[in-house]
Image 1 (cartoon, helix red, strand yellow):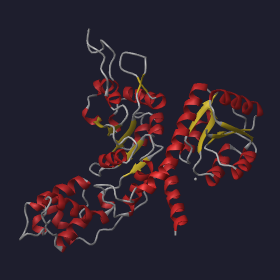
Image 2 (cartoon, one colour):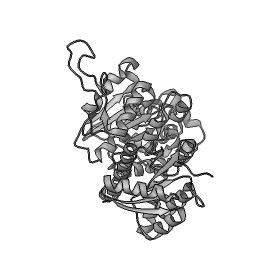
Image 3 (cartoon, rainbow, N blue to C red):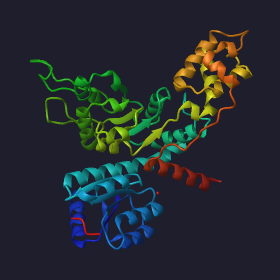
Image 4 (tube, rainbow, N blue to C red):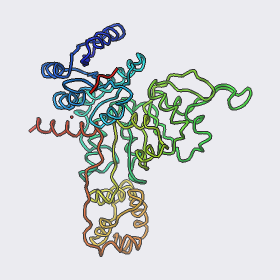
Length: 429
């Protein structure tokens, strides 16, 4: 049974919401008339979820949110807002709000949002237990010597047990697919299917049918219904690679699935249940595409509660030589000693900017193993462009903090706290 705090400065709305939720949800409900009363309750009690209005006086919902984040950073928050204040609610998503609902409230939408928020909160709590079972930075095939990749691995470790969508951002060749596979491998779905779909390879005209399937007869008279990849991934994980290529029609069906957990095949309005976790990758700037009207704002919001940024190789140079060592071991094979890399070649590898990232590094290492110089990797073993980097001054390590999201900041703050322990107008109607 979850503990839910409902906050509004209108006693009628409080009573109405409490009555509605008590009848439909077996949870422990507590009400607070205004933000100050809510703060008193938060100081003395733990809650799994807070549902709060934005426009309140004298303490606004945004002021309450700021204090609630400080007192109870692990608590999920849903905001209620009138249509005219949706922009404020969207901005609040960046401050750790799980979601928002608009007034006048739609009962079904509110109940679905509450269920999603509570499942998300529960999954994060379960992940604390998962963290104690996993060796830090021991994910197979992931090299994380640099601070940026260690932060990314922290996030992978912490979100693996959740069922929420994950967005993995990064340039081509940075290893976004490997990160997605690792999330799956350390999740509760690891025994189920991991189904990657390259959206860049699917023609727009067949994207909805490939992903969501078709009803009987849609593909031709007498032809049976066909499941799409979402239904095929039932119980497991669907990886939507380069989601910026998703057509607008498919975006609409995907947001419907994320909201309802039902797939709408082409040619029918009858939903089919599917238990699938969606992980997406993106190379393009989705915020920019949204501003251009090429990507749905509501879909972006659904994808970004958990966002993992994979930095380019030029910004995590501490990972280059460890990656080289891994690739050399793979090239040599079991029982064989890998060739060593002479100092000048090491310098070139570390200084080169790797425009195609880890993919390019792996290719260069493979080539170098076929052009050894007296059994060693030297400058002569490397492509000219890479070898030329040996004469450059030591390349700076540009470890700028990764772009953040509310959940990411919460998780990183949480990690810091755990380390310390060891050694976030008028009344709307």
